[in-house]
Amino acid sequence: MSPVRRLIPIALVPVVFACGDSDPAGPGGGGPDPELPEIAELRVTPPGAMLWGIGDSLVVAAAAIDADGDPISGVLLEWTSSTSEVASVSDGVVTARGDGIAAVGVSASDVVATVTIVVVTEESPADRSDCLGCHILEFNARHGGSGTPHTCLLCHSGPTWAGARVDHPAVANGFELLGAHASAPCTACHMADGTPLWPGVADEECVACHAADYDGQHAGSGYPTTCLSCHDRETWAGAVFDHDADEFPIESGRHQGGWTGCPICHVNPADFTDFSCFGCHPHDQSRMDPRHAEVIGYAYVSALCYACHPRGEAD
Image (cartoon, rainbow, N blue to C red; front, side):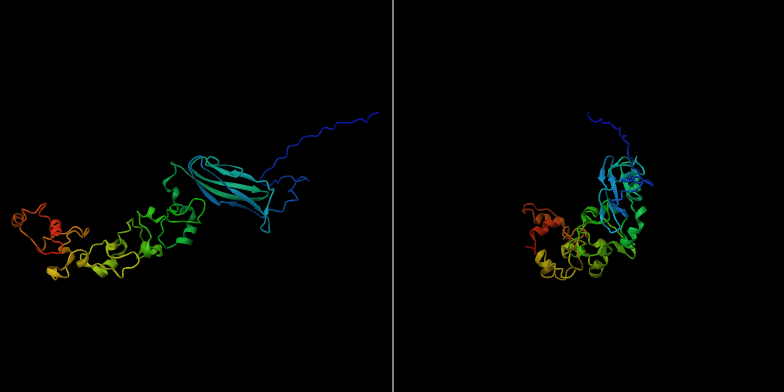
């Protein structure tokens, strides 16, 4: 006779994992898996982030760490969002849903970590980019007293303070930090008598910061403020401009001693290529026109006088 086999029904009982006071049921039931070390902390990367527009997303990585600082594998993580209308989360993938701020949490056993997510959209309030509202301590530690503006996102990316880079030409109307400016601290240009200065000047407008240097050397001379015509970006010393050799003889020949300052000829201090001979030579046009009747292209204009008399001689 064949043995009788009895079929014993096995009840399929769902196992539910929850966060909070309850822990995943271990093999013995009613407690954490005894094979896993105790979780000391959850480390999340990045610790905070900004998402730029609806549907933008990023992955938040979370690692369970034991008391020795070693990672623990096989840990079940539970993800939540304080405001799912702003940012939803699924298995660490955070997706922007609407304007605002949300705290994304991850938990395992009794250990919880959170990530602050800021979602910026076209409907965001104008001051959303003023990170100082939450990060005054970080700002003071790094920039306190420097006069650095509060528009943090010009230099920092949303996820982290680290790796900040200033695209100076982009934020300063094309001003490149070249020569001596490359090593100068920000306060050398952006602080005066304790007052922060953030002038939007071009890199050739040296006098915007160096008015005192100009006045000390050129006050009353009428020299133009186009400093780079004579100076380089490394130092004021060694500036060379030989007017006689490069332009027009004023230290020799007929014009030697015949002028008292640049404005005698250079009537436009903003542009020294604009000059007039008539300040010293008030020729009567009624006499000059007949004398130049046979000169092709003649006109009673200083620039044309110079074109024919480049050394200041009559003939």
